[in-house]
Image 1 (cartoon, chains in turn cyan, blue):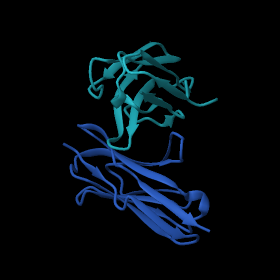
Image 2: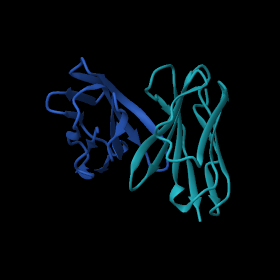
Image 3: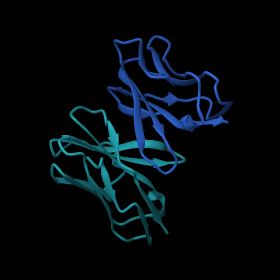
Image 4: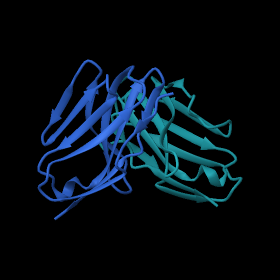
Length: 113
Length: 110
């Protein structure tokens, strides 16, 4: 298995633009997690899905952020409109059940100018 | 609110030394605690997961301990190697969900 796949690896955009981050979890895993990592706040759990259903989105910072998981092999995290303070590395992770994320993707480094 | 602290923020030791990384948490009502490794520009790799009923877990040269009563976990690395250089993070799972520490950046000098 190729592991958790994220795209793009790097994204540079201007304030106000829509940003869509993509994730393909490990085949067979039924839990998927989105994290954000910044120097100031460290690693934060944004949202996690179980069997394609959002279980806990309490970590989503505000309404500008939305996440979907239309099927077991694909998830998106969308920011609209983006702001400079959204600049961070966004990680997707997956696992076989539970709250624990066992396998992390390489991350998407987002820069909002 | 759960707070997870890792001290020191950075540590540099000569190759071959045994070392201990620390993770402290304020709420002892955790379900489990996990240690991760993060290499520069990469995602996290899970190292060890300790359930609340366990005292320690071992994997190769790594040993993680958990003392809920004192709110502490330690990651012991034996016979350190340059390849162990990375940032090590811990996180706790409890009623307040997952909370990560800020990590300890470890450098092993050849």
